[in-house]
Length: 123
Image (cartoon, rainbow, N blue to C red; front, top):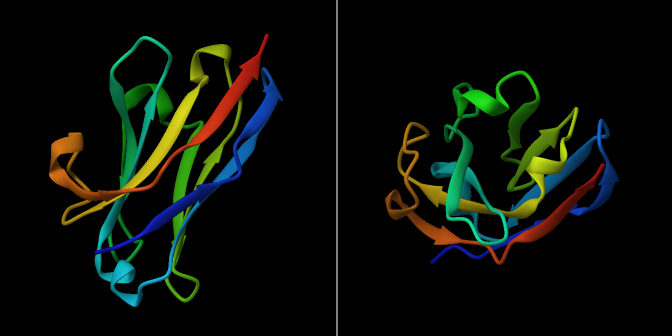
């Protein structure tokens, strides 16, 4: 089992930036792809993007391309989600999850999840 902890959420004005972190205590974390998802109030869970276990491949949902960047530091067992040019519609709880392919974009394809971190973007 892999335990994940997200952090870095908060309140930011539209146009601002935030960097979320997803940290794991297990070394096995570095052998997994990591995906980011979000869930806005009253909406279903939405895929944001993912990164391969090695960090050399990423995949993003189209609305996030160019604004969001996922990276990882396997020495620190941490994956990051850098979010720039934030919009009010980016307001959601953001979750990280581990899976076996960075190209998975459905939540059911991920095995372990963090508890989420709230991101609120004010207009």
